[in-house]
Length: 470
Image (cartoon, rainbow, N blue to C red; front, side, top):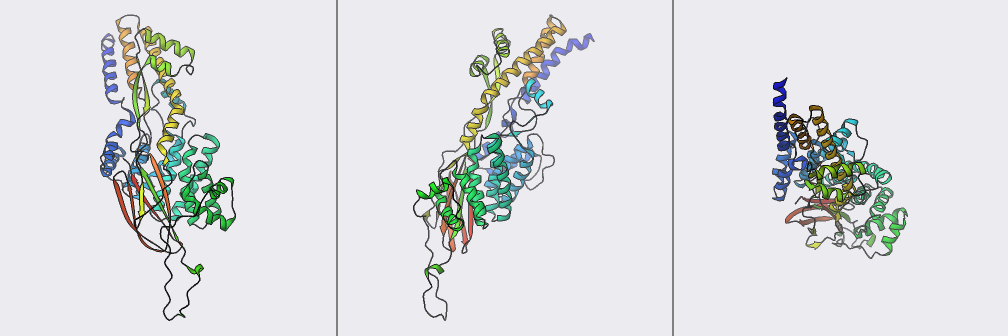
């Protein structure tokens, strides 16, 4: 027994050192190499690195158990797969992740609560902020539309509508990022021949943003249905004529015909082109250490008097000097400028939708609670260490055990840096009306260019997507 006690303090320190070297980096460190590969313009390498985290050899290989951080690796890989135009694989990953992620602030299990209180917020299943949940369905609509799969896009649009309703009624935060999903869902139902549903989604999109590109589509839909809302009326009242990139050519005279010119109404019906450009990346979370005094200043008025007093006492004794918590880093490439043209004629984009700004808002709303939680854990660790010291006596053994216990628990205190780190920082949407025919479409953003030839028939539609995650 004495022999065990003689070695116990050193075992505690060895364990603490091991944990500090292996456990403190957090989730963000595990995706750093993949994010660096995206910065270097190597999405294929990023996919390989994420495959390693998912324990598969290829993105085509099904992932087994999707638990823990694997759901985030799936989301990260889905974004990169969209960049390399592997739309089916991206859609698969998004669907799997959608079923595994709950919204932030849902009820947690008692085990998770204890873990967060004593050790770290980096415990238990990942809970996404509202904007991430909305973006899962939004990006998956892009996947289906880019493949020309209107049926799949309709299914995803209805899933989006369910989450959109929940967010609006229960969460509130993140509602601004329902706009891109509402826009895309409106497009889906417009092309599906469901004008009433299309107008309802377009009206939702107008709640947070003025979309000039919707003037023409909404005007045509209103003429068919008579559906009007104050937002739609306001949009149409201040709108001019819809630009048309290419006037429909005159119909060819049929061979052997009478030679009479057809009436103007016989001109072929124009087709719709939607251009989606997603670029940059939202800010990733980073582990940060700040002095205990600064942390207490940041949350003054939000921490309990007891915890504040105890933390101040520990700091004065020199027992604790730092608090570990996650901080939001910088967005990547959010100030890029999307451009597109059809046969050399520019496509007019609406102002890009700022996903990165919504990520910052969500973070700012929860930052105080996160720092308070970090201080509470620090105080709890010190209290456990003090209890260990008293149980072992006031001698050298008690002091070593106390320090070893605090060191181990501090090592386990990994700030929760989990997030969907490959989510685009900006989404730009542009529309154009085209006469039936074949066109060359060029899209450019962040130094990347995409050239695609499209062939559209009367009343047809096409979607061209470019995703650049740097």
